[in-house]
Structure formats: structure tokens, C-alpha cells
Amino acid sequence: MSATLDKVIEEVKTLPPEELQQVREVVDSLLNEAPRPQMTEDEFARHLAAKGIISLPDASEDEADDDDNWEPVEVTGKPLSEMIIEERR
Image 1 (tube, helix red, strand yellow):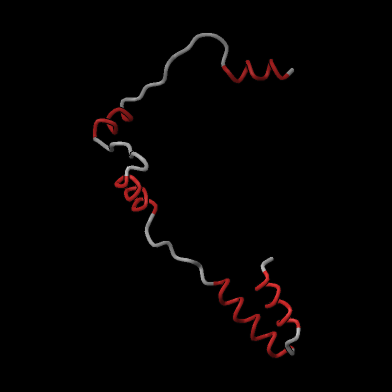
Image 2: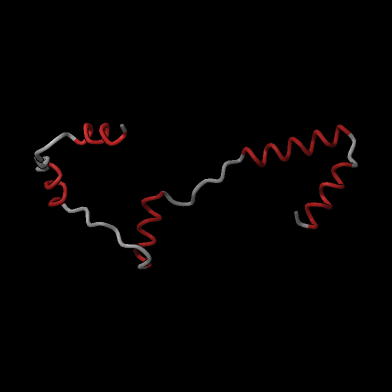
């Protein structure tokens, strides 16, 4: 703990119950105030990309079409689940 925090704690210990309640209410209200983000995640990502810190994937229509045309690859042999069960025995 810092020296300032130690001093505050010592001072709080000397307060009468009424003032302790006031301190508690102030501390509770400070803890309940949720800090609000100044920008959304998307805005932050665009900000970092503009600075050259990260690169964002290009959200072109071609990539969306690739997802629609996805087909599973067929494999031969035992199913993976059976292989895992056999290895656990």
C-alpha cells in the first residue's frame, strides 16, 4: 500500500460511526460508477489501424461469397471420435 492510502486508512479508523457511514456511501457510489468507454471496440480497432499498429481484414464481398460456397472435405477411415475413444482405452 502507498503511504497516502495508509494515512487515509488510519484517519478513517478514528471517525465516529456516522462519519464512517458517510465515507462508506461515498466509496460505494464511486465503485458503482462504471467507467464508460470513450469509443467502441470497432472504433478503437479502426483507430489502431489508422496509426499502423494493427491491420484489419478487408471485408470485401468476395470473402462473404467464399463463406457461402464452403463445402466440407470428405475423408476416409474411422471417424475421429472413434479414434479418440480407442486412444483413451
